[in-house]
Image 1 (cartoon, rainbow, N blue to C red):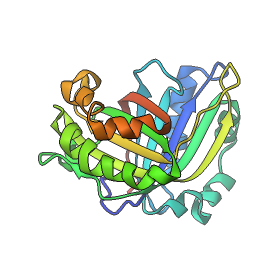
Image 2: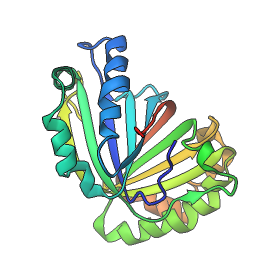
Image 3: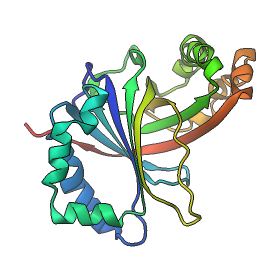
Amino acid sequence: MTNATNAKGLSFVLIEPGSQISEADHYDWYDNEHSPARLTVPGFFNATRFKAIDSQKPSYLTLYDISEPSVANGPDFEALRTRASARDRAMLEKVQYLNRRTYELLQEPWLHQDTTDASLPGQFMLLVSMEVKAELEEEFNRWFSEEHIPDFLIKIPGWLRSRRYKLYDNLEKGAFEDGSGLKVCKYLALHDFSRGGFMEHEMMKASFETPWAKRIYADLLHREVRVLKLHRIYQKPQ
């Protein structure tokens, strides 16, 4: 996988295929047409897809490292939409739910000293999305950078990398059976792990019990936690 060190943005796509699309058709379309086409857009460096293992929906997440947030809706991407095949258009109409977000990288990623390009992406992904009060944002960001990641997450066996982002834009289509959608939060953290079981590890549990963490969590407006497993890596055309 191409690990773009100069990627300052992220295209983040959640999909729930729904009952109108068979699993075989979904995989054939997404793996052989939809995602590879996006890697032809300049500024799209790589693509990885994850499948939920937490019994939550949407079931699939695709991450594209991009040069900067603006390329996700730039002229080259719009041209790709214009020339989309009839099948691609039809499948996008059939999917039950799609949430496409663009994020801006907040700071350089944290990497384990033994993490290499070959070890990324991790086999497991922990996704944490949070919304905080405006007056708490500065402290929230300091807590994440000064305590939560360096004092706790990096000490969990299998931890490879942590990245933090701020929302740039958001597009949502469809809904779930109960008519609901997703709460899209301003801040996103992605943590790569080489092994599962991290949610039950003592360092993960301890990370929520410090005085600083308790103060932050007491004033959160919303928090979403997802656990996913690597499904596929898409190669950028040469």
